[in-house]
Image (cartoon, rainbow, N blue to C red; front, side):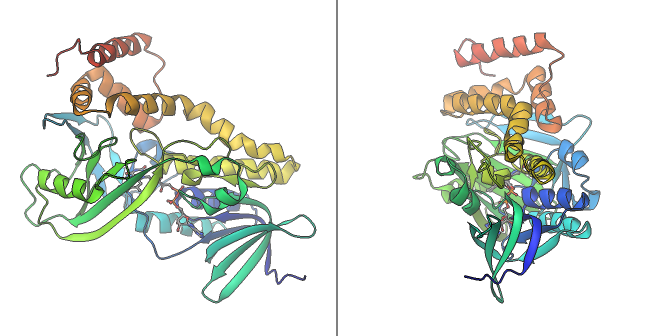
Length: 397
Ligand SMILES: Cc1cc2nc3c(=O)[nH]c(=O)nc-3n(C[C@H](O)[C@H](O)[C@H](O)COP(=O)(O)OP(=O)(O)OC[C@H]3O[C@@H](n4cnc5c(N)ncnc54)[C@H](O)[C@@H]3O)c2cc1C
């Protein structure tokens, strides 16, 4: 059968979120012919909090930041509040509608070819070359390519079709409501402070959040428990935050992957990045930075494949990622496992966050994506305090 193939590319990136747009940008900047395929029309549900490391590493301009958080408030089940100033920096807030489109447009200015369409399937041509099938407004299209980056988000179709083990992914389902900040904001509302609420009735295994975005605010929660009503959780959180009567602009939800997949490539010509690869930090649900890094590492792996023909280069994306962040993911996973289990433990967890050492360590890890190695005694102190709390030997203040 002859195919009506319209294009020949070095690489096709499927999905134009932070992972895919970054991968396409990196490939285009290096002169590769890359097609960035994204289905249009849906804003990614997201709290939109990004750390300084992301802003620096991926050259995000100031105008994309709709707000800057300079403090975080942790709220315990008994409504004990622990305020943590973000010293010497801020957490950026982006609106995903503008942020993602800006990233895609940047890739296009560097030479990536953008197409709006719905990915359908991959197949091998008679000569062994990969063909990507997708639907556009004007009908079906296909493109031949030497490599594919699957960045089509959680429950990735590319992963399911091509990568062994992709069906093992587990998810938290997250839901949020975007509200217009009332002209007279509720008492205690601070436009530059993110709130994180730990309470079983808001989430039995994750947390609820109130993230200000300038004129709007994201109020959300998540849980892996399918029986838990996220809507009821958000309703309660709106009440706690004094935002019950604020105008609701959007209601939306999406799955968040809980664990990196065991493999990110098919050993031939496909590699995954971002949510498609299962890469979101446990305990925090932070995924944008890791998606962009994953996109960058996937692009590097594809460049190596294109240059050397060595298919083993693709596995380098996961290997490099886990070398840099595997330990942090493990620590965060343990933290979620221990502390997000009952209100009694959540109460202790928030209490621990009063500790200056814990604050410093947590913020270094979040803001700069590094575990501080220079102060082993601090780690030991935190470990001992952690154990004291876990065993109930420390008093909850
Ligand atoms: C409610 C919620 C709140 C969150 N809050 C935060 C937060 O505050 N900070 C943070 O860092 N992370 C947050 N996350 C996680 C973060 O949103 C994700 O980890 C991140 O978006 C992953 O980026 P990605 O590019 O891998 O995937 P996505 O952003 O999901 O992008 C995938 C892209 O692929 C496209 N696509 C999918 N299927 C197809 C197809 N068949 N054909 C063509 N295109 C396709 C989609 O249209 C989309 O553009 C949150 C997640 C949720 C659900």
